Image (tube, rainbow, N blue to C red; front, top):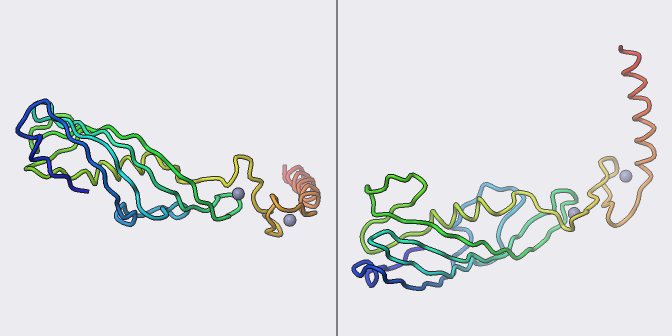
Length: 166
Ligand SMILES: [Zn+2]
Ligand SMILES: [Zn+2]
């Protein structure tokens, strides 16, 4: 995710647009239930203000995930708005800002950080997904099993057991 900034770096107050597709595998991993499908698209601009670069971008892509309740495979589009400041290397006093040096701006880390801050680590297939029955494993969105009644019985026994313990 490198952008040539030669044309704006020498002229204060100038900006340039950029647009690129990034292989989603390059954004790293670490999440078990949420991944990406296909490329991640970046579109934005870079403004030079006395050597301080403001990068604004829209990051779009598709989440390839498993519902964390019922494990159904789902694909969900996402859009993240990013705005980050890049300062010349070794001049930054603000640790929240990113650094750059030379005429190539590498926005990889900023993009990866934005994605991981904004993408949920757990997603649901539908907001009120009923999940899987912990007993028989059936998908409760698709059918109802009898386990619930039985487990209520078990809970009664458990409550009784706790009473006896006390
Ligand atoms: Zn689900
Ligand atoms: Zn069941």
